[in-house]
Image (cartoon, rainbow, N blue to C red; front, side, top):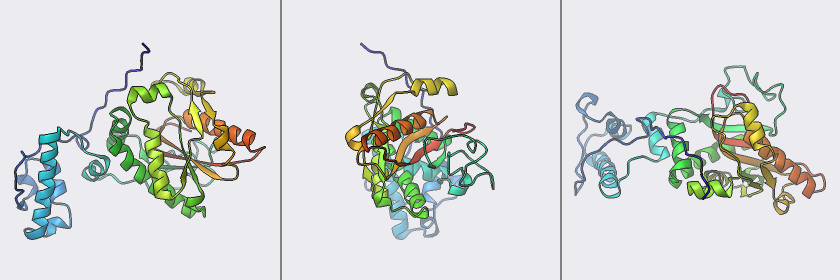
Length: 311
């Protein structure tokens, strides 16, 4: 019996872990608008008092708030739901996707004002990357980190789908700004090994990539397969590069159709860039071999980038 690596413990932040809510009550009753001091659950106060509903006490607004509260209580009472999906968690935490000017457009590393341009940032300007452009949602921390771990290790597809929707919107905006027709783009997930898919019960990169393709209108392609390797968690930069070397194999039939196209590689997290680099090089080799020397323009799209790491 093969032994699978033990997944990391998922520690949920208060914003991502649902606290015990009110008991199930039917029919739902209108909720009176209260002050923050009078509410025992500050996160429910955040949802129920959020504009524009908070500015309209009573009537339809109060009924809608009551229905939301009842729905959350019903999920807990009947289904045992303990967590919230990504969009609700992001709303509770006040999280917003990074704007393009806050990170390097080449490697995706966080960058201050005037630190990055089209040629890169101090972390990547002198490095040769396998991809030409990087799009991300944010730094790998807080509520975004919790959502990615939930999508990867709990097989909760809705979290991955909502993350993919947000990532797809960011990719579509970046493609439009670059003058690339999103519908002409191919979206390729970073392949997961069969062994790891069976262990987790989900392929989170495919879920992300499928939603990115929906938002951009691009074509989802699975141009890579992956050999099983030990987990990357805890490895140094050099160890990660050795661990991923030659672990990706391009699919010739798919690669023949990618020559001259823009391909967006989709992954959940970029830490050192070793995985993206290995996948990108394999795909470029596959396109060159299958298309008689044809080239491909490669982008990287990730839900998060680990802070304090170069590409």
